Every structure is written in C-alpha cells, then in structure tokens.
Length: 472
Image (cartoon, rainbow, N blue to C red; front, side, top):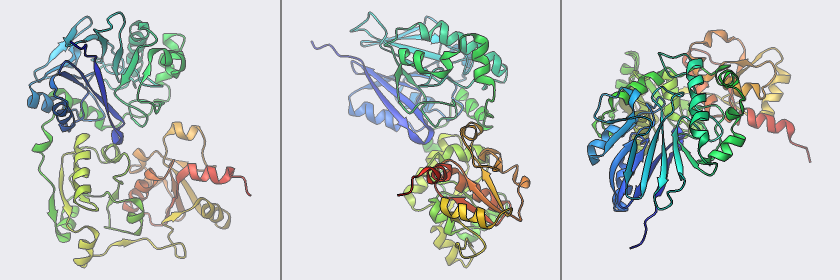
C-alpha cells in the first residue's frame, strides 16, 4: 500500500491579501481560515475526492468575514477555535496541548495571544515523517516579514497585547525548528500588519533572521516597536470580529441587487443611499453620476469601501457589466457590507437616456485638470506658484519613506472628515503611491464640493521616477 503524504493547498485572495488553506490526507481535509464564499473549498474537495471534516479558525478575523459557519453547515465539518473566542455557534474550543488527527496529519494547537486574545496557531506534523513538525499555520500571529497588529481588543491595551505577543512568539513559535514552514493568514497589502513581505510562506529560521519585529532584544523594545506610531484601526474591524464570533449567514442568502432606473437612483440618493461607481478610474474621470463615490473594482475595493463607508450605508452600484456587478457585491459581502440595494440600470448610458445630467471633467485646456502627468505637474508648479496645493493621501509610514515637498498629508481613510482643511481657491493635486487611492480621493473631494482637482497619474512612484530618470 502506497504511503500518502499530507497535502497543503493555499488559496490567496488578492483583493484582501488573505490566505486560506486546505490540508488533506487519506481523503479527509481540513480548511484553515476560510474566506466567506466557500464554494472554492467544496469544489476543490469534490474534484480531488476529499471530504472536508474539519475547519480551523486561528482567531476572530477583523478585516474580513469568514465562511466557517456556512462551510460547516454544508459539509458537516467541526469548527475548531481558541477557547477564549467566546464563539456562539457549535465549535470545539481548543487550548494548549489539544490535538487533531486524521490520516497522516496531526495538528497540535498552540495558544498564541497577542494579535487577539483568542489567537491560536496550528502546528502540522506529517506522520510519515513524525520526528519534526512540517509546518505551522500562524494566522495573524506571525507573518512573512511582520507580526500581527496588537490593537484589536476592547479589554486590553495595545501595549498589553504586544507583551502577550512577545511571549507567544519567543516562548512558542520561535522554539520550533528553523526548517519549519510558516503559512500565515495574510500577505503584503493586508491591514493586519505594516511590513509584510510579498512571499506567501516562509520558515521559522528565515523569520528569526529577517523579520524586523523579531529583532527586538527585550519585551520592552518589542512593545515600543509595535505600538509607537501604530496606524489607526479601521472602525469596521470590530464589527467584522463580532460577525465572525456569531457566524455570518450564507452568501446565497443575500438578495441580488435590483435594477434601478435613473430616476429611482436619484430618489434613493436623496434619501441617503451612496452611489458607488466601480468602473476604472479613466472612465470615471470622463463622466460620472453627480455625488457618486469612486472605488475601482480592480484594487482593494472592498477594504476601502468598508474603511470609508462603514458597513451600514445603503449602496447603489454603477458597474461596467453583469459580471462586474456580481463581483462587486461578492467583494463587499466578504468584508461585511450587505446593504447593496440595487444598481443603475444600463449604467451611465441609462442615466443619459433619462435626460439627467452627468458630471463632466474638462481637459487640460480648461479650468479643471482631471489627470496630470508628472511632467505636467512640474510645469504647473512652476507656472502657478502659490496657487497649487499638493494632497498626499498615503499612510504615514509611506510618507516617512519619502514625500513631495510642502505637501498636505491626510490619509485617505481620514479625508472625508478633513476636507475642510483644504483651500477651495487653489488647484488641489492629489496623489497616492500608484494612483488607485488618489482616484478615490478625487471623488471624495468632489462630493464635498471642491472642484479644481487634479489626479497625479502614476502617483508618487511615477513622480519620483520622473525625477531620477537619466536623460539620454
């Protein structure tokens, strides 16, 4: 009889920088930290002749809604969570020393508080090679290049959680052999850390040598490293964690958005609904429904929608086609935004057919500048001295690494509340790192009544490259 090794398959959801896993042996599988839409695991298991019998949640995720409850209901699998989670759905509360075995797979659970109080890690041993652990699934305790942010508890201070995290890392994870693989729940771009690497996995040895947070020589140094200049926690994080504590409803239970005529959209907008335009920025820059907010579907769409709008706003979508409409609703549901009431029927064309006015942004030869290249930006700065305001919507850590001189620094998440700090009599040139966030920012500024706005094409990166390029 052929010996079957333990298989690990990673699923990486780029829009949330979220990694989940399917670990299998002898036809039985466990899913670790599932995303909300769980068909991906069910379909994979069916194709490979596996049965999902176990679901492991490393903690109550705050940046996305987990599919653990739906996956358990559809497969009959048991859910394993840290005993401190206080989950209200049927589950197995685990603590140090608890173990799960199936086939040639053995998971040993480690309580690793610090990112959250209930955080656990799952150490995997392949029983065909039982002398050492093969891997550890670290959730948000240890990332590639970083560790989890320590400010997600209402009962503990960030300093208190950071102290717990130091003990979890040095007292448990860093005692594992250097060759032990680590598989975290997030990668670069996640809001749960600050300096995550782009690699999807690592080893204990590599992190011990290169992870900046693990270079701290004392607990006190580690606490200061993690909590000094800690970026603000997004408000929706607490809501998502509570949804995960109780278990979210199935995606299929959310009603599809209804098609709305332009007049109905206008009426809903007057009643407080948000028109969310998901088209590419180049399309939005040409013409858009007055008062709409632009967040392009191509980037971290759902995360920014949750950070700017919260979870309770009623939303009407403007999309390119039915596929983009479905994708828009799905991505919003992944972060807990469920009030997608409808969509503009026939999109921008439907608005025009109804005889309603669109906002048009004129070109360079007129008063407004929709998009401006780095070269044009430098020319405007020279020709319009004192009449230009440069708005940098990047995060403070990005600004510290380099910024345009005399720029106004307002992180995008804070912009809606701080538009009053900007001078409406000056041309406002907005930029981020690469252009995605600045397009969102321009829509926020226009909704606030500011009109003379330019979006710096390619963002700070393009501007910096234009100044360092060697002329031929």
